[in-house]
Image (cartoon, rainbow, N blue to C red; front, side, top):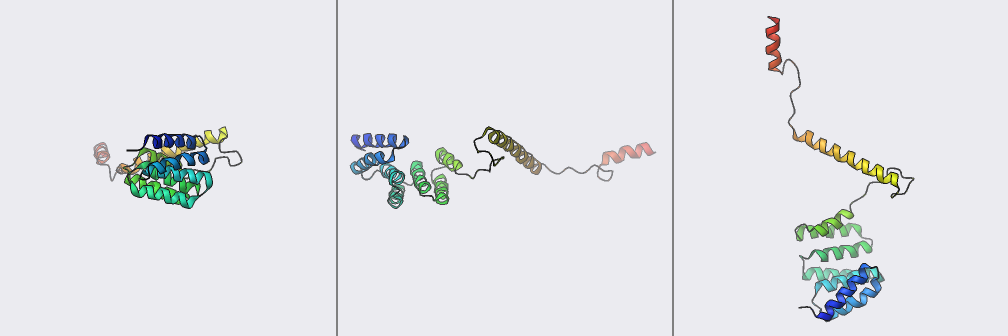
Length: 183
């Protein structure tokens, strides 16, 4: 069971990390990890804070990988390792880490959300305006709706069986009515 003071230090470190103070968070995570040396969560967060604060990616990666080896079914550990990869500029490896996390943690929603944030974005409709400009946002939403509808109609078209073309050769009903009218 984790030490109460270690848990308090951990919570303070998480709060500092969330408020973008990673260099101060390192102190609290280091103290928490020292009090409970076998806690992979503490190790992992220490690695994230070290990566963000000091850019010490080698040590941060080592801590996060060690934590993941200790408990490989914890979604937060995959997310922390991916965060370290992202902060070191290794986006592709971060995506692979999250994909591995999705496989090993039964498609955890947090990992899926983070993985979705790393998807490639389309270029702005009007490249001479900023991405956040209201015209680019509005036109982008419209483009998304149109592409969503076209994908849906394509899916519907592929799932429905082909109808026979209307012609006298293929349509028996037409042949039977025309035969009666001719006679």
